[in-house]
Image (cartoon, rainbow, N blue to C red; front, side, top):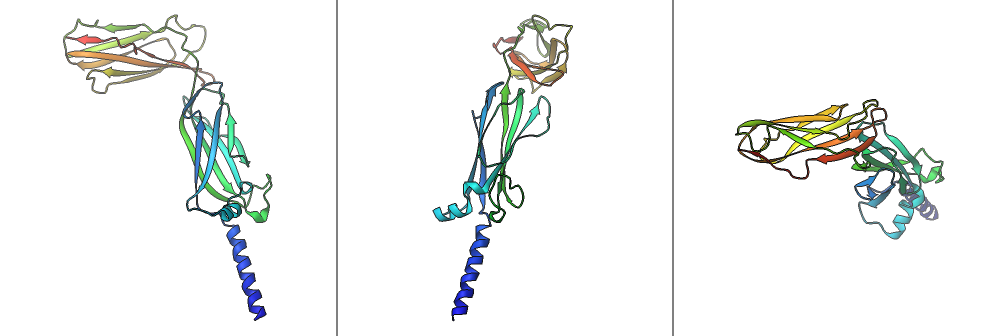
Length: 257
């Protein structure tokens, strides 16, 4: 009988050891503060969370999800105006909170990959093998916005507002004032749209090296219209997002008779 009890105890102990080395099912989350954008040169704080999918008792949480068993790898990748390689911000760290200052303006995706370290391998910061992937999370479309736009943006229209009878083609033009220095390389992205009036979804997008641009909106019927262009200035050598402005957003109406 004593042998049977001892064997049972050993089986239960082994089962507990296996359970202690098996991570629970969890949901991994990631938040950013500020939540959606920062001005270039400012810091963003990323916070990862690990939440059990099923409720755990205090003892279970202590055994299965202690902070010392979790490792966090944070990444950043800029997708616009250029697609950059994934950048490792921190790899296999114990801290679930990371503060970083992106070096370039643009649109980013921040990510976190959480691992659970096998207790049999120890829980020191050097333990990088033998763990289980608990899950990943990301914050997408995060804007690191540039400084102020250094140009005025006067609009012109051809034909002039109120002089044409529909259906008519209207060309909206914008120029940068003062003109960009011709002795330096430049890159501007002009994205045109019709904010009011029935333009049939017509748009234009031009990625050019000069400070003037235009877009023609065709077959406009009688009515009132508002045209706008977003101008993004990009550093042609580093692909840094330098500045942007919405021109025409002062709601100047264009009339077709």
